[in-house]
Every structure is written in C-alpha cells, then in structure tokens.
Amino acid sequence: MKDKMLKFAILVLGLSALPCLALTGFDPDYDAALARAKTSGRQMFVLFTGSDWCGWCIKLEEEVFSKGEFLDFATNNYELVVLDYPMKKKQPEAQKKRNRELSDKFKVRGYPTVLVIDSNEKVVFQTGYEAGGAQKWVESFKIGAGLNPLYTEHLGSFDKRVRDVLDKIRKEFEAADKAVSGDKRKMIETEKAVAAKFLPEVKAVCDDLKAKEVPAELVAKKKDLVTRFERLCLGLEKSANLDVDKALAEIEEIEKAKGDKKKKAKKNSGK
Image (tube, rainbow, N blue to C red):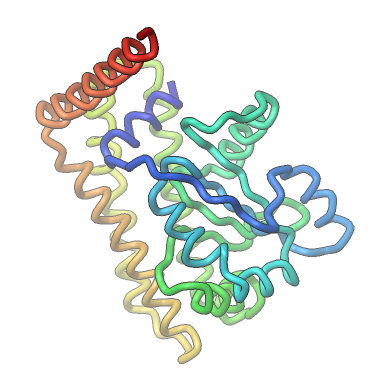
C-alpha cells in the first residue's frame, strides 16, 4: 500500500517522464561502497534518483553530476553511490529489492534526494535539487556536509527538525495504509489531513531559520535552506487545500489516459 501512496503522490505532482542520463563515477552497489567507506574512513555520497522519469533528477545530473568540477571534488572526498528507482528501465530483482530497502531505511520521501552518510550509516547531511550548478554544489558541500563545523553549529539543527517532520509524515501514511485500502478518495483525504496537521510545524522551523543570525560564510546557505523549506510549506499548503472531488477527477483522467495509451500500444503491436 505504501507503494500505492507514493504512486498517488507522483500523479498529484504531475512529474514528467524524461530520458535518463548515465552517471560517471557512481557505484550502484551500496553495500560495496559501504565496505570501501569502512576501510577508507570516507563518507558516502548517496544519490536517490528516478533516472527515467524524474525531471528534477535529470536536471541535477545535467547541471552538476556530469561536470568535472563536481566530480573532481566528490571523487576525492566521498564514496559515490547512485540508487535508482526507474519506471521503465529494467533492473535485476535483487537490486530493486535492495534499493527499496535502502529508501525505507533512510526515509526517502522524494527524488532527487542526496544523503551524506558516514561509515556507521549515520546521515550527516541531506539535500535535494538546488540550482546554481557544480561550483555552488561544491561550495555548499564544503560548508554543509561536515567539511565545515560552522554549518553543524548554526544550521544543522534546522535540517534535522525538517527530517524529523518528514519522518512523522511517513509514519502517518503508514498508519493509515490499512484504512485506505486502495480507495483513492481516502488517499486524497489522508494527504489533505496529514498536510494540514504538519504544515504549522514546518512553518515554525522556517520562521525560526529566518530569525537565526549566522556567520557571513553561511548567509548564502541559509538563504538556500529557507527557499527549500518555503517550497515544502507551499507543497503542504497545496495538499492541505486540495479539492477532493477535483483531485479525484484529475487522477482518474490521468489513469484513463494511461490505460488508453497502453491499449493503443498493444493494438499497434499486434498489427
């Protein structure tokens, strides 16, 4: 049922299918990278992506992960891992199963998600799509991913508070799974209720962050965090204010269009 809830969220967000890119230097084998991290003492840079459907993932790969400036920095500081959750691209069943286990373990709720994880599998830093290109990412990670203690001192707690809220949201959905039982209307009503419940908490974090005085080196990073949290607030507000009947009609229309497309493709393949 959790997979159904996630697919439902994808439909509501209207994410578009796009061609995937190949990532250089990233290992799809999390466990092998973890073993290397334990030997080397390095942290792991773990990318959770939807390579053949997630527009923001593909944009991030084009703008950052394919650039030499980022790769030079990242390969010298991290064990690079990519965990892919494609819709069309085929994967070995064992890899699909392991990737699902890891997304559950680290409470990944959206794509792209980037985690910096130490060799004991503790999350040190978390982010998603950020505009600005490779140079901005390198500077951001030097500050935010434990390479500068100023971030941990002044801004790390805000990241943690938001991760904690997202974890509560995940648990609310899991608790509602049995009651929902695939009923689309109940799915929408659940999303609406959960968003309304936790929106004030995220707004409080955002307001506290805006009021926080930080050293000059962290002003740009603080601005980025505020932007990220404001986007999360907007998403929760949108969900909290959903028109249930309208959202249900839109989902059914999307599913009907997909069904018609499959029928047409099947008919054409039989010619």
